[in-house]
Each structure stands twice: as C-alpha cells, then as structure tokens.
Length: 71
Image (tube, rainbow, N blue to C red):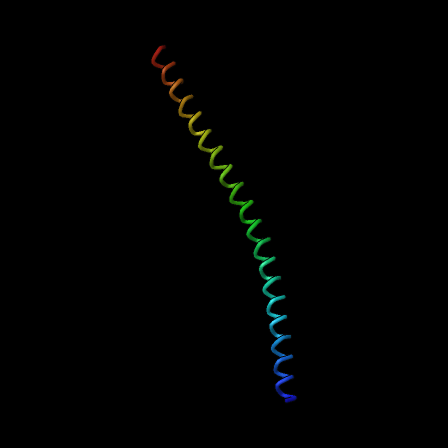
C-alpha cells in the first residue's frame, strides 16, 4: 500500500513539474516568436521601400533619356 501511495505522489509531482516546464517553455517560444515577427515586419517594410525606390529610379532614368533625345 505504501509503495502505491509513493508512486501516486511521485506521478502527481512529476505531472505538475512537466506542466510548469511546458508553460515556461511556451512563454519563451512566444517571446522569441514575437521578436521574429517584428524582424520580419521590419524586413518587409524595407523591401517595400526598395521596390518603390526602384520604380522612381526607372521613371527618372526614362525622363533623363527623353531629355537627352530632345537635345
């Protein structure tokens, strides 16, 4: 009987330890995921700005070419 009680107590304590550990691990993962999402958003913003700049450069290059032809 005593060994059964010991096994049950040990099992319950192990279960509590696993649940606490998983909760902490999940919190760390969420923090890292949030940081990664912020980096991705910053990168996407830079890509969008780069694309807009490339479009403006193409328009300006076309304007310069037109001015050269007009001379």
